[in-house]
Length: 404
Image (cartoon, rainbow, N blue to C red):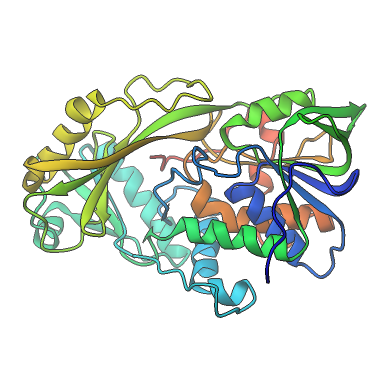
């Protein structure tokens, strides 16, 4: 189907659902909502940057894991894997739609102290009970299976080689967006500058171009800018942009086997990336960034990333950086977990925010969940109410110990 060009002016002055932000979360919600035969309302997605070149979606490392410490986060990822494995079928079966391959090299968490080792053991027991393939590996077992590691100081590791790894997240996003548009969702290149609210309801949005549009429900899918969108409705959400650094490098001596996504005790992670390798980390001074701050920091490679990677994998002592970028986490400062669902007082304002680096892998379950709430008022498949705004309201964090 040939799609009409995306316009900057709305075709209507009223929509049942307005989604602010058209990247992975906004497009997932738009697709799930528009694909349900029980919903026949009008949907508008407002996105100010149609290139998405600085969106968290575009700057992600496209990974998925089941190694979380909370049962809910494990189940969210398990649904994500199921959706990926049946991506073409789930989106209607068109031959144009690609099959998305999950490269299941797994995550390998390394513990250098007994306290963290016990956390990994506890997490593994819960994950296994939910059907995950996580295994605890002794230092000797790691050395036998992956002889390229320097394991000085390491007690044990937690590794899941089943349904954990990386995939083509850009393809998933592109096809959600395309299929949502085929379903009649209107995408708009514009910017929301004001949200009209009357008492306990939001009523409309005003665009930068001047139009005022009535909205039955507003979904905040603004990524790292979620707090700015919430404030337009007189609401607060504890989400801020945090800089995350990624480097792609070539190794003079490549490894002779696949490299799991290795989470080093230093806070650095590294994995294979086709013929190359990818590594990343947060800055040591991990504070809120300016919304438009994507300036590189080459010192972080020399002072933190490369020393940690070369120490853990001696074969990487001689490498060459071939690409790097800075992306933003939409960081929930309360508990590093998603904020999903309605505000408890302004109930037609929906949050789809705060994924703190887990957004791509959680986008399938989150899009489905927000669509269920809009259509039915309740979650039908997976109860994600523990991730609702109520905990923000009462300052009660949702505990998740497996944060990268």
